[in-house]
Length: 434
Image (tube, rainbow, N blue to C red; front, side, top):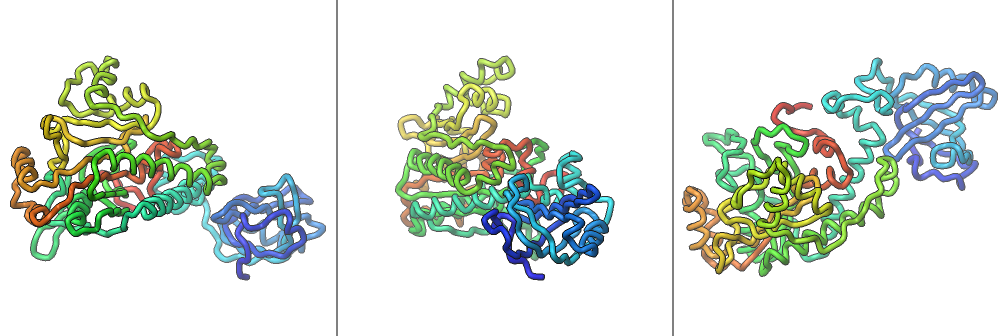
């Protein structure tokens, strides 16, 4: 039996048509003279209705012998039924059992019996069968497509940079070392240095969507050790140009998901509100003052980084997407460009959701002499960045860019409690399987 339709492709107007559906046994209900099988496929649910006087006994007996989550194909006739999922039911004429599920199940994919997140992640293949979890990853796929569509439409070329590197992106210690033949290498923390080199190469506007690796021992609801970063770099651009592209990307993605994922948002019971642009620009000094209104953040001083507690206070105060701009130069990455008339302040920005940071970016320092001095001021050896610095010696345009966390974007968009819910198989300091 070869599938002819997904559940979403069948409509009440097809009343009387013959179809074949394939999927998992979501539920079986037996009411004596009437039995039901709820079949689940990627697109939703199909109610298979079996009046015992109209359906062959061998089909009903087969259904009764099935365990939940077994895989079947069912052929039958569509019957319009307003009370059924999607407004129709299927009266079966044949059934083929493709795979019998063992019992007991590692968890209940219907969600009627709740499971802890660790249990869900241990049996992720089954957790994803839940309509709610399927909806999350369907939305994620549309979200990534929307990002690609928007950035490509705005003149950005998609690139792919190495994930095995010889030196740290930012000189940090949060690196995963690997054995690379007869020497040590590292998993890349960011495509930052390489996408800047593409500005020297004349590619003008580029983006990459790919994995990044951070060996930070965080055990929070917003940190991962392997994440997906959406990175952009723009030539002949300022930090303000980069922020405008970023906020418009966010608004476009929300609009796209709202338009193309209505059924998934309904499953998740989310009324998605598209953020209005432009987003508010909040100077770092103002952000510190807002944070200090909370006793928990009273210790903050100008020059301190903003921790999670400060982010929460500022986010609750502002209540919508916003940028924190004009950061102290000495707490930002060496490639962030300082203002010439205010060298203690740099042209860096963070995009914030009220819950957390989503993106970090800046106008970059494109003058090689200043870049070398920035490295030395941070006790970093310029020789370790020779391959990067060389690209600045032979004509580097002014440029700016940002990196956006895909999982955090999805987490905040769908109001997920934990960023691990936005990853098929999350990697953190304790989880490396499945």
